[in-house]
Length: 467
Image (tube, rainbow, N blue to C red; front, side, top):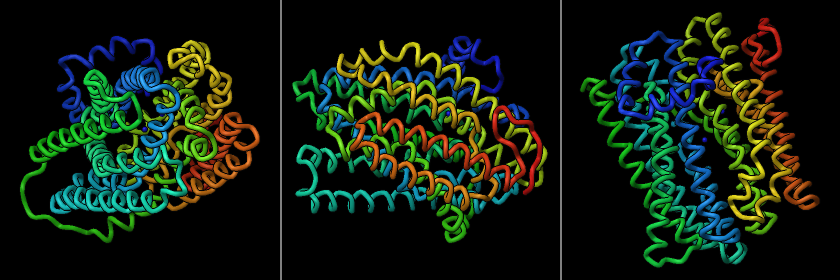
């Protein structure tokens, strides 16, 4: 849902990508267990970077085809429903998909195998039950509020809720894989396999005579999500069985829940902040406008994936360095800022250069979103300039204040959207989003400096401040 371990990675990306996507995929994870710790994080980020590049290409192609097949109106309906399901599915984990990244390495290093077995099993059961309950309540809510919802959204939203348990479980399995440095198991199902399956099933259904509309796309998404998550569950479970010896389990659910709750707030605010603009456009404007805005945001995926790839690779290392190694943590955190900013800046320039012809592929009406890219890119680069600050705060035990920062940023973003979208339409959404990202980056960077004495800002010296 933003990595190169070295500044030269971008120049050798095709070779590295080819290496990782070939028969040697299985060897990469093995390397992760035998390399030095910092190299492990760098390699995981690089693998995540490669997967995100392939994912961005797949996502862009699939969204172009979806838009072409369905037209902007039906595509806009599908986009709003799918984005909502991905957000709510992530939130349905209630923070466990991130807290396991903190607990699993700790239990493994301290040889607390009973607790390790406990959190693996308990987190899965909890997420499955919670997400199923939320899906049921959501379907009931949509049905009861049908008179206040546009008629063309009602059935697609009810159908989309069937995806929730599997989306949530997939996010949890991603967290468990990241905690073990299994980058391929963590990222491939969600970012490579699922979008390809959705596209293939959509094409198959159209060939069978189904209508090219949002409902058909959602049916394809449901089938692809279940197939992907169940396969990921089998794969991750099989690997954990080989690495964790059998024995008794200890469940400290209250302790895990207390830690997960503020992380849930951080993740909630972050996810809502990342997608609030699409949701707000859907609330105020027509599906055609949602389609144009979403296509514009998708074009920015080449910039966003740098940030997320670094975040995927370094969260575990942040957690391990916080145990009595402040100098290593500070040096590593500063390094991750460079990993994030320079590739993001390069990708931003590339997107601005190629943005208009990329949007034309969706359809001629989608070029209306090209001017918005200049505003949106500014916000994304501002976020990249401070690196994955929220991961550092969360993994170092400062998740509460991180949640507060995101709460303020989300309120700021929603307030701006409420004021600006009715006045300026899509321009209002772009202005609100960019300003919110600048505010978020500034607040997080300042909070890291105040709490940890680490300067996470690309052009600032690596001095330590007051903790």
